[in-house]
Image (cartoon, rainbow, N blue to C red; front, side, top):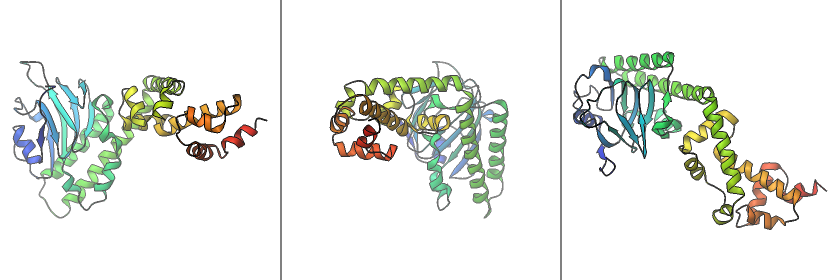
Length: 306
């Protein structure tokens, strides 16, 4: 599967055809109850790129989901979100029958056209989370999501009128809000794992700022930090924001300011030398950032210790 070319699916109707499903009732949105599918989907396995949004609630799914370079096993109520253009795939053991239950909601961007959600949907960071950062639902949360999927399905199967799109857009918006709520709950309730991330972030930044890497490469990027922590940038930023009130970039800047304060108060290095040691090519850029973060220039801060 690693060497397989992704299969691009441009339409929801095309997805239904490839997966061996009946033609969707609406070309731009589809709600699929996986429990109603008894046979093995002929097009289920393999790597795919969708040109539409996918929101999944999966349970008892005995396959591996590959999303980017990561694999994930689903064996409990788990939810994940895929935006257009992202690569994912399904893989089972050879000769193993694919089993699954849950819900799948497919939404083409054209369905959102000329509505506020067309732009607002891009603000939901969880569409950029990797599979191992999926949303793990409690039984109560799973019931809520299932109920919402059923409501969307009911509207989807009703006679289409001038209110149909407005109702389904409102239902989709509510589903996304619940996604945000449940992710924030997950950030808080998984305290041990999440505080381990904070500790690893602190160690990573300390090691980076104490090494020659900062002189060679400048300040660490959000992408660099996220990769070292084996998390997606969007997930790491959202996690840190909930736990500390600061996003990843702000944590990097905070560590920079701490190191700068240390050097300004305990050494006789010039501001230019400190700026260079902290990865700045131009001392003015360092001084401007320091002033922004502390309300003092580097020299003013140093003089406060004399």
